[in-house]
Image (cartoon, rainbow, N blue to C red; front, side, top):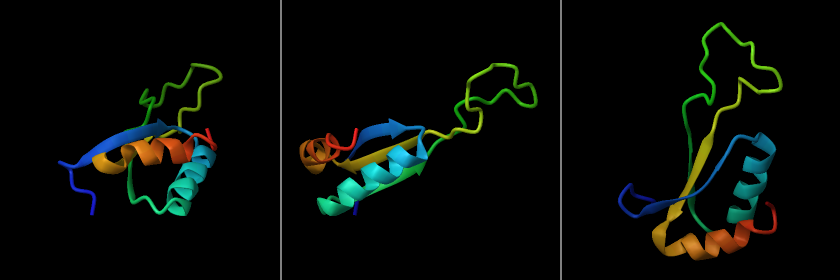
Length: 80
């Protein structure tokens, strides 16, 4: 179990495809992880005038155990 006191943030991603690849790599390496979606990256309410920005993107933080951090970092290098 990944407890709040023994976890370390591995990566933050906005892309669903990248999130899936990272989760697959961690699962293949048998490294337990916890993915926590954050607040929307751009909360401008109804006003969305900034072009070329995905306003619906939600950042997701992937946490691993502190003891597994080095292994997890090496496991996701191939998919980044």
